[in-house]
Length: 407
Image (cartoon, rainbow, N blue to C red; front, top):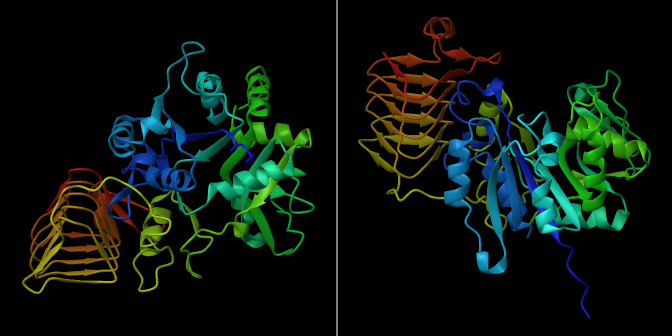
């Protein structure tokens, strides 16, 4: 007889406020922020899970979740006849009149989902990273290890590892310590110049996670965080293992984008990640059809280039019109309209942005329905941008909020 497939429940933590991404998160939760022209950040983790045949997924939401809930409900429709689902689960105050106090508390307050599904294993992933990963390989490694918890880790240079939560592993399998932004990060057994940073992706044996969550809920000193409290609890018990992301083999990966993972938690990181998409040989390849990033696609005509309008090293989504303009190293979401004589460079334009004649947009992020009037500039003079009330990041990226008219 064939071996029974393990019963797996996916939980995606999507309640993040994303303050460092303001003004993009002024009206939406961080996982709902558009990315790559046609996607939302949430689409990357959901695509990884669904492509990896983890197809019973609860997305825990809280902060300004309307657009996120709507996107999940409209886009991520699975086969009910096969018992598949992706469902948003808003904070419900099931354990009293309080919102989620941390990522572990979010799952603890939602344990009814676990009781209803009765899984063997629970996969807990974050919702706001850009990457490809086959979660089946992580799950199989967890099962084979016999551990109660397995943390996915990514190799980072030891010299810069103090910015991350670092996994201390003596043998590359068992976690000996879980260190939050350590001053002296430990190296890896096979490479002392690299450290292993937590990706915020975990697999747990279901019974062990439920027990740990209950114990954590009774601890008044806990911050009720998955990485800061639940994993260290299992490390102390000697039941936490590590999975090296470098061992993950995603179908269709190129030599250049294999192992790509980015936390786009700041405006600079968000902008840099978009620039990773647009080179001739992209640092992260959106066009891998063997492991596609899935989303809903608006019913729009193809992008149109008229009056000599052209784009270089850019992604231009359906519904865009480029008329007599130049777009360079940029990403344009559906419905952007760039008019005659305008120049857009190293920028990210979200849905419905309009750039008027002879306007200039440089090193900028323009949220939905922003209008740049004829001859106006954004990103050219950062001092002027700040005086207008725009956000200018530490790296010099100007961000303009939804619906703002410039000029």
